[in-house]
Length: 478
Image (cartoon, rainbow, N blue to C red; front, top):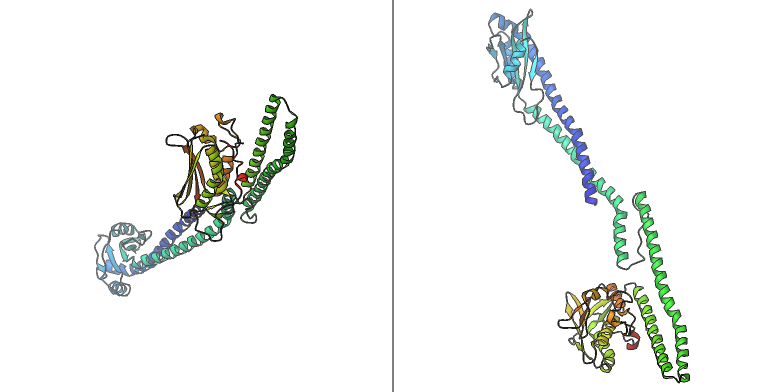
């Protein structure tokens, strides 16, 4: 945008210079031509007063010596022409030019004349002036002077060069001024663009300086900062509400479960015992939902602090943590990775919690006799982790909705889960500048892939989060 502003200022300046300097250049050429013309007409008039006797008496008289002296001194050709257009007297350098005939016609009619009107730097024809020779009111002939235009052209070219230099300096000053003015005007816009990107990347504390640029842009910066403050405050309140509500509901929910559990011994009817068990399961399910909401609130509140983790070690830890549950459900859980560390740069616990959500879903839906494979490798200048299962998979429309909050597949409504595990994984992966993709398997099942930016090994970093597996299992069903 700065370039366009500078170009517009420069174009306006060039147009103004052309409008001002073109008439001035023409005026200078006319002035130089007029100065020479006036001198030559004065000389021609003096010669005309001396040429009268030569035309009357038929002899050269004193005019011939005058013309020769003038030619030797100024290198300008002069001729005396009679009414028959013959040249009784002329200087050594006299040569007729294309404009001589026209000027001579006017001079023989009794008027002084000259040609051309203006001499330009590219003009080669001489300046021709003619003065009539009068004798008692009768025109006997004319004196014609053909002056070379070299000195005039050099003077005009010098003036034009001076004008061009002045115009160039003016253009240079205009460019410098335009860059400064454009920078002053656009500095708030540039900073606004940068701060917008910072906020979009997660830095909700970034703000625009509201004391830069013209008053209109200062008001815009102030309004933007106010809007950012309001949006940040609303987001903080919303997340705080979710966290506080989830936390505050834990105590009454725990008390309710204890009371329901204490009712068990007093129930003797088989139907009553069945309903009692269902009530306990519903309280457990509600506890899972509250845990997932707390985890989601914490994930969305992350300030995008990055840590270096060994994705291979984290994957091995999570596979080991989920192996007992997989054996209990008769699911083969395997890890496919090399022994070498594979370092990724993520927000804290992103790899742990994302793998927990994906492995939980994979084990849950693979069914007895199924298989789940976790693969870790380097891909696309980053770290790729894939979880493949042998479950029923999902349709294209279901894959598009899988990361929405509380979404459950139609055939998974009765399966344990809250519908927040993939949402939490997506939030953590996005905060790490990574990608979460899901696609159907080659024959059946689902392939859930995580990609994180690669990182150099950090000796001071903790590559594995050693949180207990039970605390990392609020992951919901699909």
